[in-house]
Image (cartoon, rainbow, N blue to C red):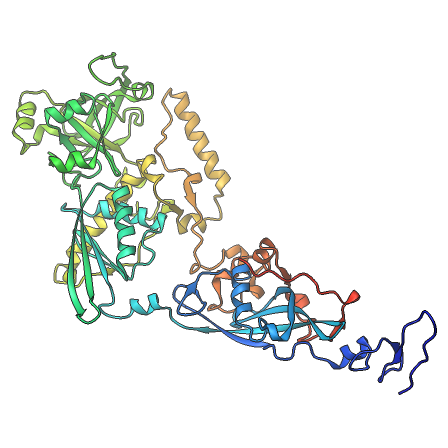
Length: 602
């Protein structure tokens, strides 16, 4: 090889052994371009790897039995994938990761592709850069929690929730609270009984969090016990199974109570005859004749439990037709908490008649009601008929026999097809509720299964009527649009809103107050679920993008690259992904200076 003679003030140059251009001396005697055409920077770095995902909970396996939740195209999943690329993190290779981005893949392909750009110093003073694609094969593997769901006796802590009443309306409401707040996460299985539900948890901590949730939403009383399963005397380790009995107070919404005189005085000198307005961690009661409200703590109730004189059962409620009403304004009373201005305008004297007595006799009742502002002539409501009732409580029976109690106590107004006793009233509702995935206990699969199913349907219908008549109750749960409302192409949301506005104008013309308890469209959610598929209007547009039915539905409802752009990660869409090579040629880096290290921090 020829050597160029040096002159004063100039450095020594040599000729490249491949192309013959003058270069600075280096160990390989090769220029950077020729070196890049023959060198492979990606040597020792795997271009294919395997990651595992749990099909049940959609979590990804990290290491040492740890499973993490990551969205597709997210920065968290990118960090997880880069950690599985062998040879990328070795310091001996002197490889620096410059950039990483997602490449579009078919939704049903069970593949993830990442475009990596790395830099490496192949010789002193020469740094090369190269881009290549790494393919990750997604395999299904059950996580520890999902495996425990299919094993018998794998639970470590059991929470038994019980309420000693003859219906299941409280548990239907509790089920909606659990769904909205996701309190059942981590639960292995759920079994339902006539008087309660059993929740099985893999450890004691998750059961304790669930019990804490129950204590915040309903008045409860908790008893705990444990059973020794096995013990190791050498290491002094014992294995226990824990059982927690959570008893819910037997009071339910719309129950009629006759409070003890001392308790009534402590609750703001409220009337002793009250209705249970709603149940939370407190017991909220209301005087049906004055609208005065009060709240009873869980400690007050369990210190001296109260039995309702009338339970809100279907057999105890009577249907009444409203014949007329007249607003009432209460006089101020210093000895009790005055009703608020809102409650004053809601009280009304209502003239009622039994629905069964229409056309038979002219018997009418005129009573004050806290829901008088809701009703108008022609409406149908439910109430308690105290004229034909005999109380178990002696004081309450004496008050009734002496005529110190009203003849009728109005409980709530009826809406929808229930007013006309429509057989398909439940199907005509514009809203629906989600349900928990529960297992029916074997004790309920007996000869009385048919009767139990009929009672459950009745309890569910009664609960639906409570929900559509109480706006405050609906704030604590998620209501979804029914399928009939989604499939109704003839009547749009604007038309329904126009109809509701027309009804409000008519009520204003009749000088009636607006009904703020009725279910409105803006309260309903679309009910998007992964197992429901896309909307019918979008099937034609996204048919090519959706892939197979068993595709990753978690990513099918998101736009391409939307999550990646949100996390600041580059994304190659479907059209450009066809032009991407598996491995580009290495190119020299200008100025021979390493670029900024790509950060994998989540």
